[in-house]
Length: 62
Image (tube, rainbow, N blue to C red; front, side, top):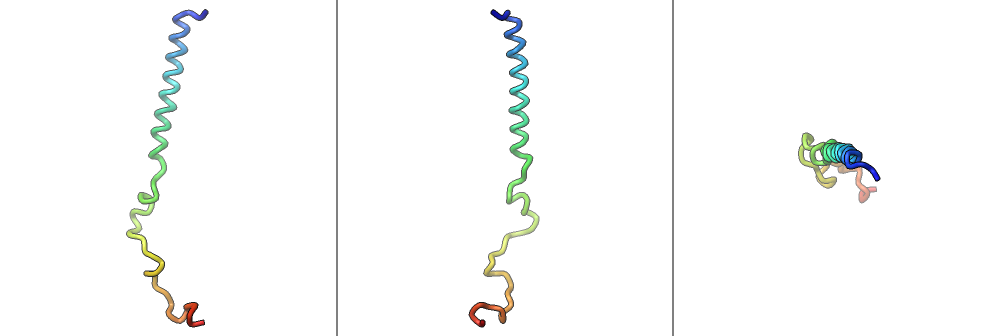
């Protein structure tokens, strides 16, 4: 049977290791920007219907 000291040492090591993994996991959640954050500086998105088109180049006129 392991001594109480050995048990405590293993528990302490395991707790520190798990705390580090949890910290890194929390950090990693915010390391990647969201879609809105990436394109925030570009202004509001436009619909394809609002985009300027060449009037002579439509499927109906072909």
